[in-house]
Length: 207
Image (cartoon, rainbow, N blue to C red):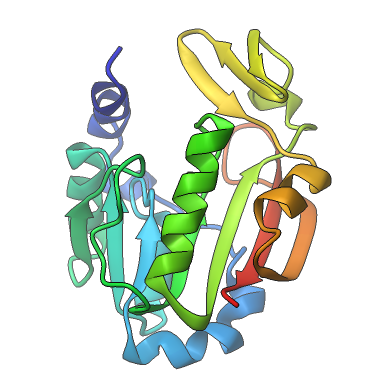
């Protein structure tokens, strides 16, 4: 199934009242506060969980997703956000060194390694010097959501039921962000879904 159609089918069936956020960004709010003068870019925003969290706390947000249906949900729950259709496999449509903060929550773990590196490089180019990326990605311990299942395409990258997912360990994250200043990296369990999901949370600065 074509990627955009897959996500459209998911978000078409999500009602605004179902969109809830967890508080994973809470520890970083003080560091994010200077970005209130510049919109936070939420890459792969989905139905707008993090966009809602940030707009409720006074941040301007540019919510970006591949799925038009996802952006419709964002418009419903956070109408003050700027929504944009963005394909992460293409150059990001933002000026170089224009953003203080980028959020990529559960959106960087669907790609081949070379594409993942290219996306991270694009994010770095969009960030101001010292700007911050906050992201969460699948952990290799995320067995409830597919870790180790299906055909392995690359180390820790699998195709299962027609979908591709990458699962990270610490060495892979450190390799991916070798040119950044990693301020925080921790393996955590999030509880936004039906079953506990194991993820890595990472904060890194553009240097």
